[in-house]
Length: 104
Image (cartoon, rainbow, N blue to C red; front, side):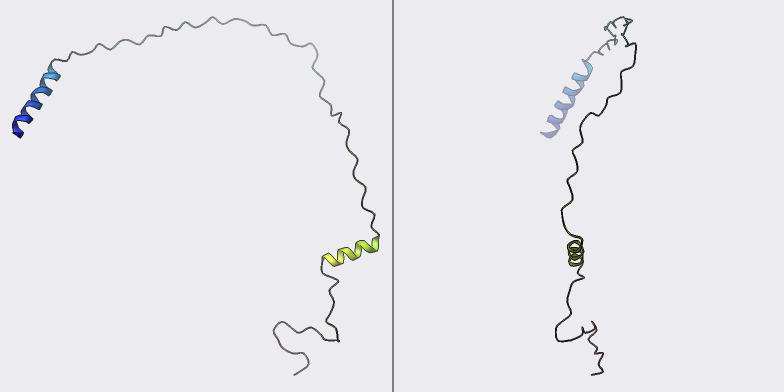
């Protein structure tokens, strides 16, 4: 049964290949017509245009805040941590490694 189906398929392929004509390849032609180039006259200004100017009025800078010099020094010192206090009672700070400087 398989051989019969195979033979029928092979015969159909042979018949389809034999009856085919070679197709004529059409020549490629360009049917587009390019328009003629025209000489276009561009009117140019006689004098160059002036450069654009920045006429915007600058807004005045805001006045500095009214803070006394002593207050500004205090604010700067607080911002950098220079106003931190030592512990009360005369205690000195301990070293980070935990050793004592008093010999105990």
